[in-house]
Image 1 (cartoon, one colour):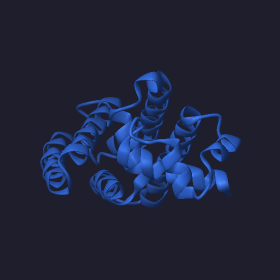
Image 2: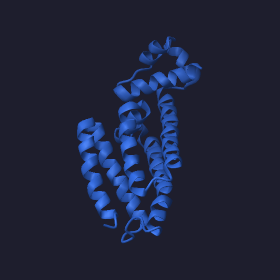
Image 3: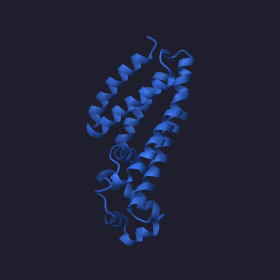
Image 4: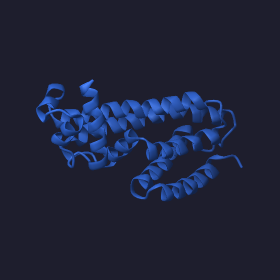
Length: 193
């Protein structure tokens, strides 16, 4: 139980203050234990941070899988826009997503390789999960097949990236504006009309 509480508190601090702005003493104080007690559960700050990363990676991937499983019957336009909207809403309400986005753009320098390995694994899995959905929509004539499904998914992830950047830097109002404009142009390029 204590290791989970340590990770929960660490997630909150890493999300708000980043790796460099978080101390083990702060985490221990909030958990209600001595700093040395953290080392019973984790070798050090790096191991704690990377464990939080791993847990968040799993949670973010679970969000994607659950979204896909719960929305497979929606029309492709609603499915794709819903995914972007849900991700935007998730960022505004979920510390895991805030942490994930922060470390994706600002990983600790000395942990860069390890963090980015997780980030790219997540993005690769996201692409693999979205590809068959896009491919099926093209085969079923729901969207234009003038481009291939891989390119359509890559462009979709580019739209998602733009929205994520705006969420990180610009806040809810600006990210909504980015979502509206990006989606409009993306969908016009993909739709058959």
